[in-house]
Length: 157
Image (cartoon, one colour):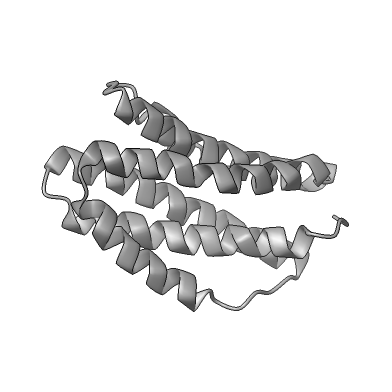
């Protein structure tokens, strides 16, 4: 891929997945309700799965990025906070946060060569699944985890 923000956009994926995994892991630990722990666990598992796909992509493209320590630490701290917040507020924050990433993932998807299209389609779908989850949780839908589970059940992107 060759557009000005490409390497920066890829780095955003790395930062986002490390950050998100830590947020969701800590929220899972600090949430008191078992049902919510399970929902945070789905989000955490999706972030780990996406992080693994990202690392595979880096291997195939021979790119490297330093580990995003600041984002990892920030994720731990913010995960504790979001895990202690009232559920509806936590979901509103989560839904809002996905918006900044969706634009970047869309740009990557739009510029992806055919051989990389499935990876960037997956990254975009992953973020949309998180957004859908949060919005459905705000509406108290019993279908909120469907998109998450669907992506987690895919063996390959």
